[in-house]
Length: 390
Image 1 (cartoon, rainbow, N blue to C red):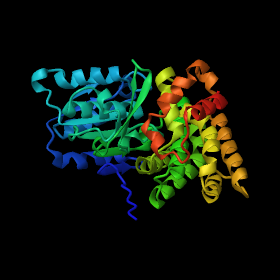
Image 2: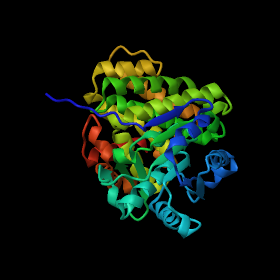
Image 3: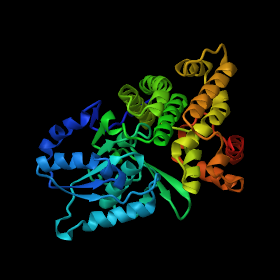
Image 4: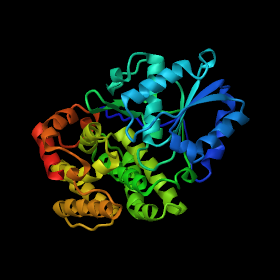
């Protein structure tokens, strides 16, 4: 029987302390005319945008800056504002952008992917919700990352909030994968503690969901298992001391590895439900994931082989003699890590409303991340997970 799996990544991934210095070499042969930088005002204040501006100036590449990404969750309205800027620029006669450079975390990268998609394919970003709906090549992108968690800088996925429906849309297509990703821990040392926590625990959710996905392969397994070990080994340190460069670098590698894993293996119900909570209440994505993950593991456990659960338990530093103990140990370890880094313990603390659970469940079941969840359920199963996590 045929059993094929694709493994999709950016063409080039610059990784490690000082990696930004390698970007000019990558751009030399591109013969670019003009770039649009997609970022937020905080990235400008921190000086990260200026470093990229210097690179472009030295290569005689002109550029404009769109800094209108304002919220931790990218929205349709941000994309539309950015598209207006893309089409008009500071000078409509000289817009002609041949490259988009996103600087920041997942919000900025996803916004850039959406701009790149609609700029060449037309319509609204809402038209591309789902999997492989992008027909034409998109504007080339470079994603310069400043957080350790979302891995949006190297994936083929784009998550955008449709404010009109209060839904986080999941858009997936290899065409929207950035050409170059940059992960330099020197760009991550200024992350606030709450961002370190939320993005860092996202690494854990990515790794676990990739490990139990129906599309997991030996390649994604090794990447995800390594990412899980790094997150449990270094996230507390990165949270306690943002200037701990070793911890920042290890978390950066964990984020990249988990992203490489789930980009090809897929995710599951944690992200399907979290996307809907984020669309409805606009709180930190990673926090939702941390709260939901133990309950989804328990729901999925009947469909996960015992050996896999024992391996996951070992990766989070626990020893378990059987499947049931492994589930308990894994969930306990996740909850302790979440508590240690200030993640809320329940959805009620994040403003969730029980009256919304039925609609949130129905929306979650439409999310493309459900396709690779190991245990398929119905709306009442999702409501039960939400209720237990409340």
